[in-house]
Image (cartoon, rainbow, N blue to C red; front, side):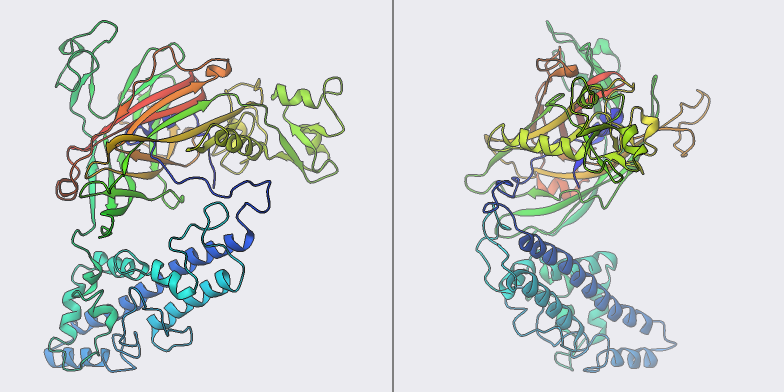
Length: 610
């Protein structure tokens, strides 16, 4: 799903937002059928992802059934009955934990594990691994899918030529789907290994404790998949201690602005360590304190790269008053398909430089209009009466009324005006790609079309036309149907990645409620809601981020009156991150917004873990 304009108050995601780098765009030249991802390749990718998830879920369920049975044995009235209960669990071919029932006794993890398995096997884990293998064979090898080229395929290196080779990659012994399933069970039930040992402590029935439970890659129990550095889950609390911002003593403790000496042209302020610095069209910065926390979960390190996959979730962000706007409330939004991130430990690989990035908002890359869908005007361009520039295309004196109609005319004809967001997104993708290598599409917004909610993609003039969503453009019926475009560029820095450097993405949504009276608690109760921002993925990173606005306020030119300073995060060692709740980690970045109630906005974010 494309990320699109989030609206004014997404500026508050300074709670933990910094823009992290992501993969190069794929698909080659979409106008050249010989240089684009094919439908067969797309179906192959979907089959690998969907069926890997199904296999992992089935594996967790099968192991859970065994462990649940063992725990029920502990509920028996006495030791004799408990031992008899456990004995049933490891009867070959019958017990929930036994060879022939759970698996075949051979490993289902790592290279070669899929050789010989079939979807018709009786043992559960072998059968489910066989189903995954069969699905990959059918979608990726029985069809002409491309698993190799980045331009037309999926980018595997080395290129797999059989379903077994794909499974060796997907089901590797360090971070593969089987190990991930094992880790899920172990994290949910920390005593799992003890339960397994209790099933057959003397192993008199050699092999009757299923291989899935006994070993990963030769190690003991469910954590046999682990490498030298195990994964972890930690909470990062945002630091509300006050420090000097700018001036001659940045970062020094303070209580009032007077504690922060000024420099010529560089004023010193006293603000919370975790904050968002917000600038609007008059160039005067304001500060919003951020109090809350987020959770970082990183998996096991790949022993070959010293890199682990990470996910982040927002735990809480304290609501606060925003004068003239309302009470700003934050809601975590999971399962948005946000990108996973990476944790780097033990120093960078040879030649691996730090990936810094720049985020650029171009307020106007052209006119975007919608399409009339359905009715007698189906397929014609359309625009709402408030979208003046696009509406002019429909004017019989200035445009071509035979191919462009007003949104009202489209509705009268039995259709609906939609598609402006997609039109703008396509323009933005082309625009970013044309900026040079490494520049990619991030998000876009077409003025005069709803983002999210039941009217997503339909024409609008006001936010009120978009329940549970927002109307692209300023809050007035005078939009120009401008296409706003955000691009991101990764830049190699000569400084190598520090141990502990990481990035990931948070799923967030901002809801604004009416301001409570001063004598009332500032709580978010879902009452008197005035604004929803669409759910979005907020990247967080310890890299260096810079920002720029082109066609600021939709006028020619670039930037703000005060040039946004570079934001540089501070990584910490992996051991610190694992053992000390991320204390000392600093995440910074830039966020840019178009057409807020205060015009175009820039926010420099600063989140300090304590």
